Length: 218
Image 1 (cartoon, rainbow, N blue to C red):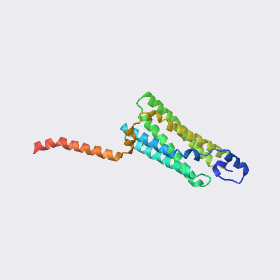
Image 2: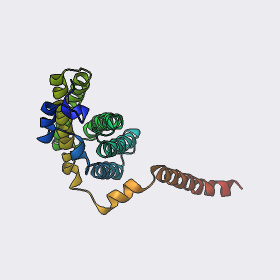
Image 3: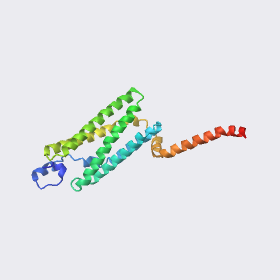
Image 4: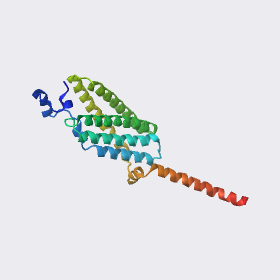
């Protein structure tokens, strides 16, 4: 039989006891998290833009972070008791996007380290990302089995994964001490617009530089 926190309502009184005692459920903690996750991702994206780190990795990190937040919205609004399929789809999207987010951010943090403290933070995040990867794989493997003990193990792995990701987000306090009012502005501005403006300015400068030579030739 499935673990009670997986299958939802059941007619077996023995299996109802864990639910009444508050068995592990991942939906409740996520109810207030999506907006916080999206804001953290946006601030970090803007902070990296302020550091002139315009790259596809930074953009992809923002996309995966927002996808993670969207998955959390689905998890929080479609409980496993009433909409199991949607709940599991949201969980899959949130967990996979969250894992990709932390992995990409490890790469950004490691390659952007300029001080020993930055490098130490990069190593810490790599360890957290490795723990998240292992626990997510174990959770998926255990979840595919019908054994109640393995289902319970899958739930425990999910909780370890969630706590690990929350700790990872908490490490951003190291960089967020330098957040200013311009950080959010930088994040909300269009990167392609800035690039086009910069390119246009360059062309104008080249044109002005060549103008005296053209006049001399005439």
